[in-house]
Length: 182
Image 1 (cartoon, rainbow, N blue to C red):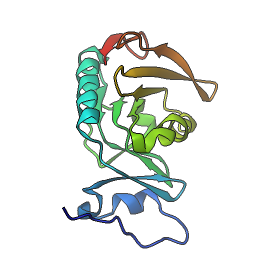
Image 2: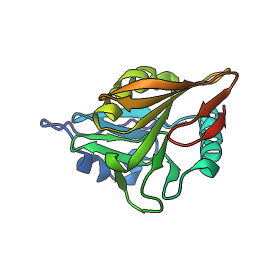
Image 3: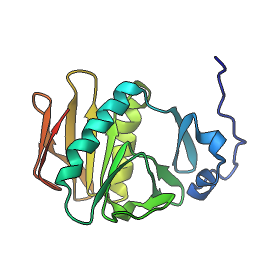
């Protein structure tokens, strides 16, 4: 098996979201490339267990969504000129808009599924970045079995937990009513 290294020239002034979005596809096929304050966060694309859990979440959310919203996996979200994240799942307030990147203001809920390589980023860094960008809800899902999930709502500029899973189910009353079977 050939291992492809992720090699990009350093940028003395740091990277911008536009720089990352302009990368050729062959640079980003094997890695998820995100940007925090001009620094690249490069991680492997998630494995099958992660993808199956993502599919369950998407399927559970879709029928409960309010009109005018849409659930999508793995889209680019610009949180600032030098911040670009790719949440595992988003619920957007601009249904059926086709674009390379969505604005943070279009995101009702950002969800991250914790992977071994992204634990600290998902639990602390991304949570803080989404809150700073005023994304109203953050869903943190933590495998392995039993999968647990916590929904956070933005209150006073910070996220406060408003729902925790029990026995493999997360019951939501906000931002819409649904039961997510994990």
